[in-house]
Image 1 (cartoon, helix red, strand yellow):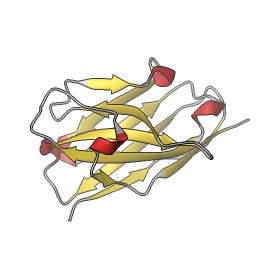
Image 2 (cartoon, rainbow, N blue to C red):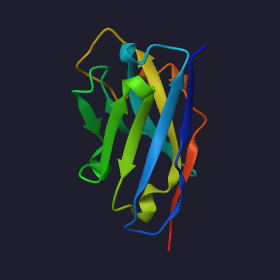
Image 3 (cartoon, rainbow, N blue to C red):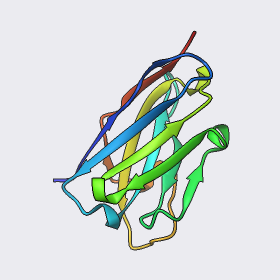
Image 4 (cartoon, helix red, strand yellow):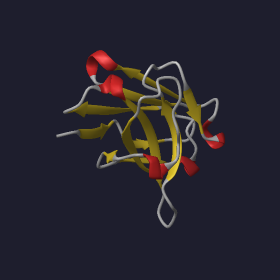
Length: 127
């Protein structure tokens, strides 16, 4: 059974950094594109970043470009989201998600495209 689990969230001051991890089990990671999403209170879940099966293609939402970096280590079945220069508006529950795909060099941040989701990890940016 495919499972995803996020970790690494917490409380950080503005300008600080966190690295989120998404550990996968029950499937072959090379067959799946992975996305990171977030949901702030009272808002819809939105795409933050994604990485293709091949790791060669990544996408970022405009608010996080230049501050967040997504990466994956298929040998460890783990995808990371390095978040730097965090801002209060980054406060949200962060989720990772996976979608089986035959496309190696593309990924999508469309929430509806993803089939498997983790339980989320809270990120709070506050002084």
